[in-house]
Length: 303
Length: 255
Image 1 (tube, chains in turn yellow, brown):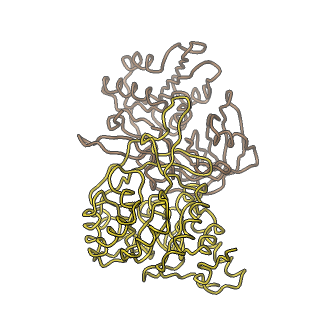
Image 2: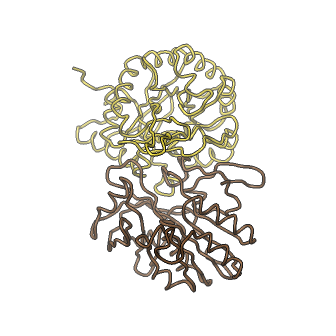
Image 3: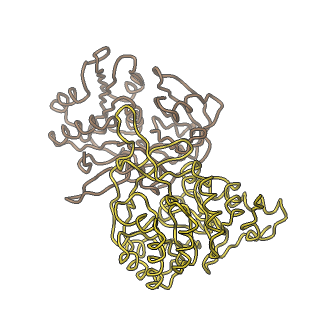
């Protein structure tokens, strides 16, 4: 059996499969179906300083091979997370990544400070949420602000910081480099791609927010290309996500340069998707005589 | 809270009305966990999102349950293309369900495709039940016999008067609620119907619970897309149909 362990930003995980923020809550719901301790990590629901109620429904519409969402970061706030969710999550023996969002730089810094001495393993800096009016993606679409917010958050916390990049930019490599120069310990990508659908009978957009974030298998080739470009631009570990639904998708991401992967929308289609992906990666490694999962990272043979 | 994701074998398929199908599915583990008012989340071929379908009857002895759905979108069309001997991939049972431990008389109100889940309540509940079932027209009337087998009185309305009484379920409700004393009203159907039922119930000081619908993602309470506004005291918040519902106390719903 191949060694599946990976290390992201000095945090060891038992395998490279992490569930993606916003699709997996804080883990409890899926733990009813299988023990979440088998996962490499969990990226928790995007958490803000104070409780946030989110956008008006409808918040979801299916698209060809994917879906649009406009949840708008509904969450119970960081204090609730630390008190109610974190102790339980830590007892499940899984790396805990806290996805952090805010509407001002100060808010990001305050959360980073609050969790600095907690048991979380990694902060995932969400500067790429397309569904909130203030903050979120506003910080993630210029290289200067990516570098600056990363730098400031780093100054306020002892925890490793993984910057989650938006795909809604012209040059993803530039954003990846900006996060690295700001001191990011890792980067993750992609967040959802901004999209829209209209009901032709009512002439209304399906989402009350009019636009939302596209995820699911439809975005995979775009995500793979961006992960490859980002991984070539930086030396810190890259965590790849965007439409991963099978072990083949996950292996492609790793070959493109991802040190680990996140699985999101696939959880809705098949609750066991992350488990099957872990098993599928193991089988691929064994079938190909690879002893260590880290040995496939970035091994794509470019023409 | 307990649910599983497993295959369920299709043991019977019946078209109750044009485009409205009743399927009997076998999975004893899922059945053993189910109660009235819950739903199952069904994988539809290559679709990204599962389709939430209410449970219409539960047969614990034989380990089978029934669902009834209208094949009107891509997902439900795929479902209606499956036949006896095929399997569905089912996640469930999900949601809170109706409280069936009721003393006194119960009034069940169903509108259109909101009718089937009320049959499950009527079968599971020990208290005497009456039902008001509303449909568009005679062609769309379903489950009448099934309701008559488990309810004391079954009233049917159609929008065009082609069967039963012409009009809406709420027209009949106003009359009946004056005559008969009910402990609780349970309702499932389109939102305007539920709102009207809730208002009549409140006026007559009858407890009322409604089963809501919203576009759904995960089905288990993780993704938070199926938001519906509820109030607790003066505080309004977004609850989630899949986990906090689908059954809500009507007084808590912000219409």
